[in-house]
Image 1 (spheres, one colour):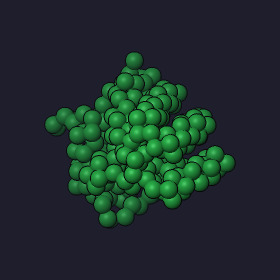
Image 2 (cartoon, one colour):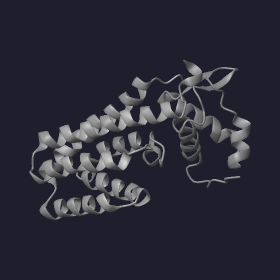
Image 3 (tube, rainbow, N blue to C red):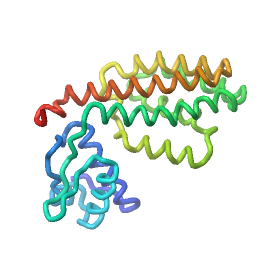
Length: 217
């Protein structure tokens, strides 16, 4: 049994169910077993219901009165669209970074990228987060909030389950670093948007390999 903490309970349940959906454990059309979730996580039904409402608003669940909550029939295009929307915001912030990061921050960004190239997948995940957080640090507060919301919609550890994720990320990050180092906001925007688009395609491919759409075709 995996007991979760009481702080931000509904958010943790959201993350748990979202991870099961986007990790391929819960297939489109399958019903959410609230009793099983309560047993697995040692929580009451009330925060589970709150979590289901949030996931319904995200489009991951279809909620039908008196019938329950079902995993939405998400398409490949839905997955890629989510990443591209993420990319639009992240691209805007990368353009800001090209203009606003100072010399020391640019040096730090390059250093993180060098470490990332040689890192293991586990280390790479942490460095990937540091890379993007440094870029995002120059964004206005509400833009950072929106980026965090979009990031939370991608389950933790998802990239590590995507074959070849780090090799592709290294090449993409190099283009982003080069553009920011050159203080070229347009190139930084394009590089970040491309990076997130490619991540969306890779995510869709990974879900397909997991058989995510097999039972709903």
